[in-house]
Length: 509
Image (cartoon, rainbow, N blue to C red; front, top):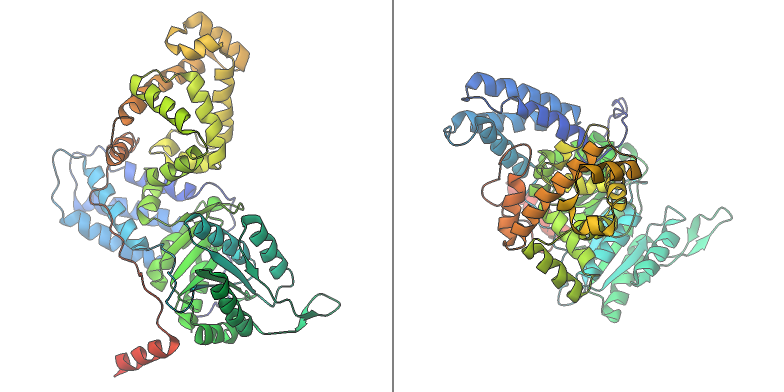
């Protein structure tokens, strides 16, 4: 079994930033050097790939993954016919996009469905301190929002506070929880009561009686992968037979996350990986390496501490974010969730304003308030095509939004309703009132006019047409990935340990 080496160097320390911020910048710079060239040659393709190699290694991507990835991109780029109407750099960008999607996919994020005789069972495993218990709560909330009836199960008998934490989470999201605390000593450590296997078996029976269709097992975390007793997890796997087993790990640990996933997969045969703290992962090495090294797909991403901050993993969206193209589908999903709180009458009013082109700065100010409900501004900017390139290096997105709000708030209501009437003298007054320069006020008005025209056009478009339009607005050019990546992930239940053992015997024969 693969293990961490005791002499392995620690991960390089860094300041957490927006997801893939470092990789996005370095990879973007590497690909920009190809843009605008009249033709592609094998020499300039290989030069560009050296820059891409450095960008990926700096992002803590596994060196074997980097080598295989660049080989595929180079072969595809050299072997393709250069289309006159498309910038050569765009063609390589398309090759990089396709290979990034293939590197991280395919993936099916559907949770397992119940069997005829029992609810579906999903087991979480991993090292201690990776966010496993919180992730159990996030999964339960996600399942509940999808119309499922989940039950949380406290099977972590090693960490004294784990069961109480799970009970509080279950209470917050309004789902049942099965906990059997047992006896504890003076220090609060468990010294008696049923074991983890018995607790899991009892919980499944209880869930069946309550009409729950999904059981989520929060198992004990291990201190270190190099000294990790797996027997308890193997017993749960053999006796309970979970339909899916997900490994939960901290994305910030980089290569350590990859090594841990590999060790757990060899012991349990994982169905998926959940990466936590992705909102602070500026490098992205784990996200790009895990699938290639372990052959286990990433299923979900933890994007913050709040229970509603769990996202389905979309290889296409991740590839678009890495290349600065944004992730429109994820953004639309966030907007839909916020807009569900708005009355139907108000939505129809907004739609009519967009179609008529009467959308003004009063409406835009309301939209900025809505943004606050959709999560951190840095995540939203990463979801918008080209926005990450438009932001000055080191500038705080939250501060940028506050500056825009300050400019709008310094206008009169009449000026916000008729921004086209704001002349030079008015811009000077607004600038003084907001602590900005007149040039910044003019820039905001110009950008708002452009955005209003785009929104007017988008109001009459289909979803696919909207995505194409937004992708075309990217500062990296009019790149639009071609064929939609089709997911072919697993949809059934896991094979039992006995079935898997028989399959291994057949392969040896």
